[in-house]
Length: 449
Ligand code: SF4
Image (tube, rainbow, N blue to C red):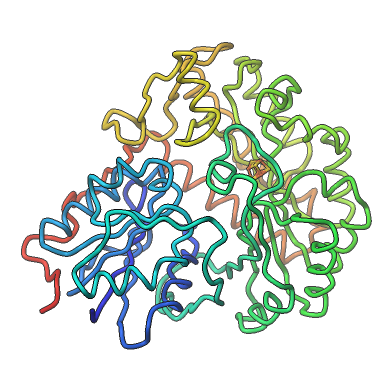
């Protein structure tokens, strides 16, 4: 075993302007013995340029599954073994097995060493099962990203898992009740090695793991004087003390899943606790008072939604001065309670939509109750058109400027223009629409020379 190729497949034609570094490969690089060379091919940002290799390792998301299987099939046709992991293969291992020599179910770190040894001996097992939370959590070796054009943000992971159990959430489907967090000192030491001018993004799905741990993290971050952003549950805004600590620790932006303005929907998605932090506008005002920018996300298609909700929600996000917002059709992901319920109710239009060549990004995947499938497809686009209109962007920037400051407002403007472009690029794109269905190319140098 002399060389491993890591592959990150893309959704649609590239390049993507907002691609962030795929942290998982930097962790795997750290866990790979130094005598084994590695190459990262990230299709989102660069042409697919295969190199001679002994093993291909891919992380597969549901949205990129079709493309991932194309790439895997092409490598295997040339005799190069392929191992796949990530949320999607963990949820549908039988599907992944048809395209890979080995499928990792659970956290890949725990079995990576075994995979490398088995591949070197030509004895890969069809499945490697690792309990979530098992295995080492080393600091990532980011040298594999050098020379690649990613968004200028440093990604850091503090922990995995979430306290909640929203029915649409693939994180909950993957981790269940498991939760873990690295020691604060270890996270701080890692951040100290990162470029000082760059925004840090904590990739945790919910940074508010436990109140005492969160406070300790904030106290650890404050002396670093770094700007950072995170995804966090809305209950953080119940607590002025936590918000003060976040502001003092350098928090510039939080992403919060508001999901819906209708309480019936929140209840149905098992997120009724979203309402307990008080009315949304109160929560938003508390963040605004501390100069913390807000990235709000909304989803449409739950049973109480009606066609007029697209515009109402976009106007709400605009009126609240959100820095960024996302408006998406509800997407049933494999392994979630949502997809099981919709299947049971006979409402799935495309049960395995991620494999369906007719499926386009943004299409309705199920029959909504309060509107037509076409309205569910087109409504989020209309909401985005309102929020990302030039007048809306300018008005939100001017309003935010006094509290956000010049630098953060500049970042907000940049993020809005990138979002405008990315939304237009992805909407209605087929899920595997690359020009090169066989990316390894005719006679491409796969396999060791
Ligand atoms: S709060 Fe977020 S990460 Fe946690 S279960 Fe709900 S959607 Fe998933």
